[in-house]
Image (cartoon, rainbow, N blue to C red; front, side, top):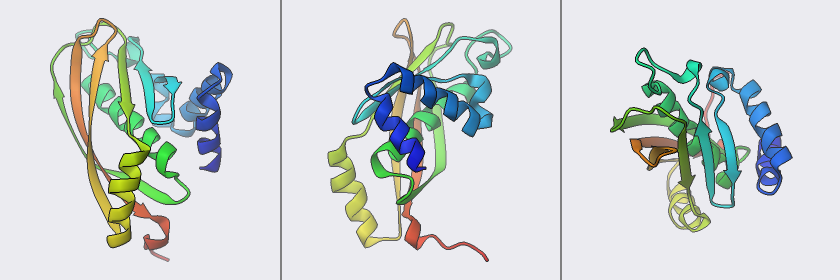
Amino acid sequence: MKKLTALLQKAKTSAFYRWILNQALWRAIPFNHPHRFLIEEVADESIRIRMPYRKSNLNHIKGLHACGLATLCEYACGLQLVHLLGADTYRIIMQKIEVDYFYQGKTDAVLEFGITHHFIDTVIKPALEEQDAVLHTFSLDVHDINKNHLCTAKVTWQIKDWKKVKTKI
């Protein structure tokens, strides 16, 4: 996980490292490989990911598949949480996702999602000092390249300090 954090840092300023980051994530998360989600921009407090309009992302009527759009939302939100919180310190698990669909995607979809350091420092970390795990719901909007609003996802994550994770032995 430290390698992922380092790659995310380098991807902020280097197209080459964004390419490496995309390649690494396609291999590390085989379920997402056919989607070919493309991380286009990594900033301190935001990420932009593109879901290409390609055969593996289409449904039976040649629109972007609903499950692919939901996966895009989970992917972007999870990556940004890992980026800001650090996967070596906190375990981040999706608890629930709800998606409302508004428009059929017939071009690439783009998701820009941000979380601020201020939010992490004032909401998430103080809550983790008081309780073992925190549930938080993030809202993400996906648009196509023509600015049509495709869907809005509400993704609930459980965030927990690794020291408080109990596993069976």
